[in-house]
Image 1 (cartoon, rainbow, N blue to C red):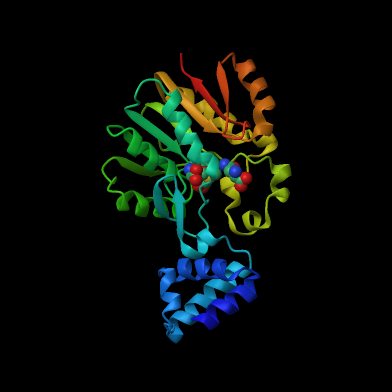
Image 2: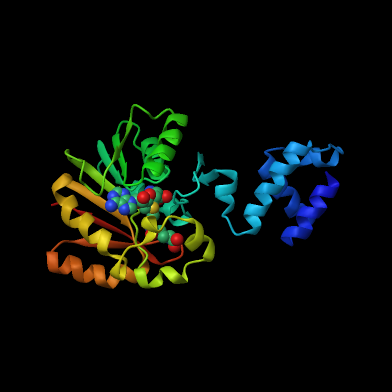
Amino acid sequence: MKRVIAKIAQELGVKRDEAELIAATLLERPRFEFYLNHKLCPENELRLWLKLILLKNGVPIEYVTKRIQFREYNLVIYPGVFIPRLETEYFIELINQRVELKPQRILEIGTGCGAIAIALARIYKHAEIVATDISNRALDNARINIERFGLKTRVELIHSDLFENIDTRFDLIVSNPPYVPSNRLFSLPKSVRDFEPLRAINGGKDGTVFIQSLVEQGMSYLNSNGTIALEIDELSVNPLKTFFRKRKQTVSFVQDQFGRYRYLFTKKG
Ligand code: SAM
Ligand code: GLN
């Protein structure tokens, strides 16, 4: 094992203890075993090297381990499904703080691997949740996570383009929609551009195309006093202010943990 660790350190240009961490993660074995002079069987060594080649080629580690940590939840992630981000962990925090009445019915649009739906199901223990996505791969991924967390009876998954297959009303509609302005897609990190689904992040002009449709259509899927909560790009704040002003609709833009305006909350009066 010593030889393998040294080779990983050399190949990836990392320190020995980082190489140990990577090996422990990829092999799903405790690090101390590496000091007991265990030998890896050839099959496992091959598997390890195949994963390391993926990492070396820039594949996000989440797609290699097929696991992500979202808040307190360890979730399965399929390659090709959007990897939940740090800002979305905080989005859940803000929803919990800002949505006054406990929502009974929640709709999540574009659930990806199901992270938001699962976190909200844990916070609102009596709520019924509908989670949608346009991607069948995302829905298959979300189904696995929802079943692992025993939430099959409380979170319903629906294949839908925006509200196409939705025919009921909700107290809360949430989404981390595609919101990267099209002209900034090229400036995303290579690992995002090359490996994450474009449909999950392309927000069109100003990053607001999806958001505007969601707000325009979403109002008729809200119960009175219902809330729409969205994660947004900070560069979309100005165009969105204009959009809400034209609609004569009140909106609050809220900062993330770094002081950037990254979320909006709007209510049906
Ligand atoms: N909710 C997950 C999260 O926060 O990690 C995934 C968010 S990802 C930024 C956006 C998701 O919206 C993707 O899973 C994508 O497939 C989905 N999506 C894109 N266009 C959609 C549409 N027209 N209707 C429903 N979902 C859509
Ligand atoms: N924050 C993501 C990124 O920069 C984009 C997320 C989104 O479009 N919803 O990769």
